[in-house]
Image (tube, rainbow over all chains, first blue to last red; front, top):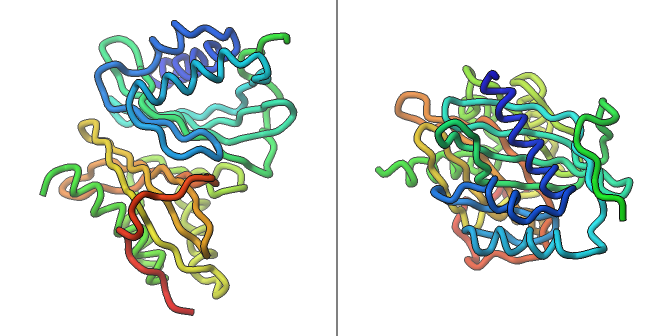
Length: 134
Length: 134
């Protein structure tokens, strides 16, 4: 698997963890050894595993959290670090996201996520995991 | 100068180029050898130097572009790559931004920028360059 494919796989695992409401998977895919951060749309910056992962736990445990689809993921790899740009489809609305990863051994771990609104639609209809059926 | 300080310096140069409406500086601070991308708030993803830099040229040349202030910049360095999270104050509104840099020789070059809305205010009133007086 190329580095690009491995990064896109890690990116897909992030959306799969969200779709499956899998707290353990979400915890595992974020780096435990590097500094991490997260910028949820409209929120202030979150720093560190406690702040970042508790935010995802709250989102995952909220039964009103809508399904999410990932579209048009592009990976840029710079040696041991990479980021993915993709669209997120949430209840018919679209966000654009930056997901930053670092290589840790054989896997790529997430260290940062930012999502924000966009007025543009993705080119590809669906290249990510389906969300849960509520 | 530590890596963290050097990355924060590169981040400040980005906002300085914007504030000074310095197209050459803006062109120079983005990597010319790596893939680059940009997510302006509300826009679709831009990829490559032509798309990214023409967007900044258009913004810089627009006399109605408001001044911008950078607040609360935090740098996370991962070897040869780094990102900065900061607030952007634009005409009394606040955005949060992710700026990704790669080390090229002695300097850090920008490879990605995303900014999006936030409901939170920065903790520090001003730690970035002032924008132009229109």
